[in-house]
Length: 190
Image (cartoon, rainbow, N blue to C red; front, side):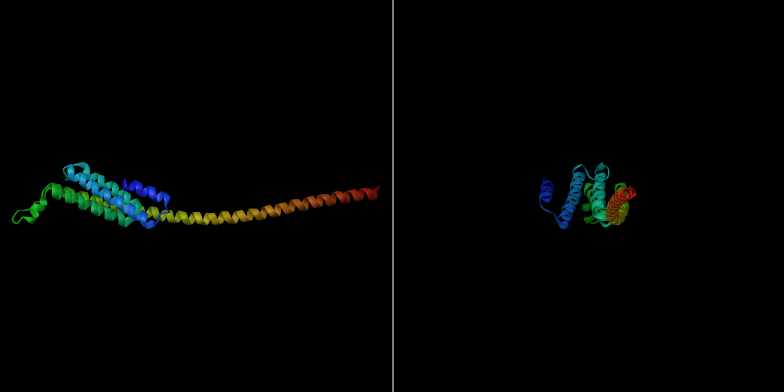
């Protein structure tokens, strides 16, 4: 509901970039928090598919925030998945209890692999985002150049139209003068 009303307000009031960035950051942060809560409620760990939901904020941040944003969200996603595994396996109490050994379980290894996949997704997504922005800048430059060409062609067309009108007027004047000369010549002959 909050984002609905915020978007309604943005449509009525001219929005600032700072406000839009804050709204985007809040949306991605709430998505991460929501997916983390879903993972905790559904049993946590990497056994359930809740960790796959974290790809959505990574991809969204790639589009909105670019390279650094996608990497940051990828790292946060990995930390949240790791935290859910720690909570699910009760590793936190094992870490703070003296004398209780902490084993590297297959679930921790899978969590590390998921973390690396998030990082790779964030890295390549950010790279793609950078390429897209570079392409957009090049397209804007090309559009600006083409707009200059169009303006130049429009001015040449206007000049051509003026010249064509002038030539038509001269042609009419010469035709009229020729007709008069033809009449005078006819009169002289008669």
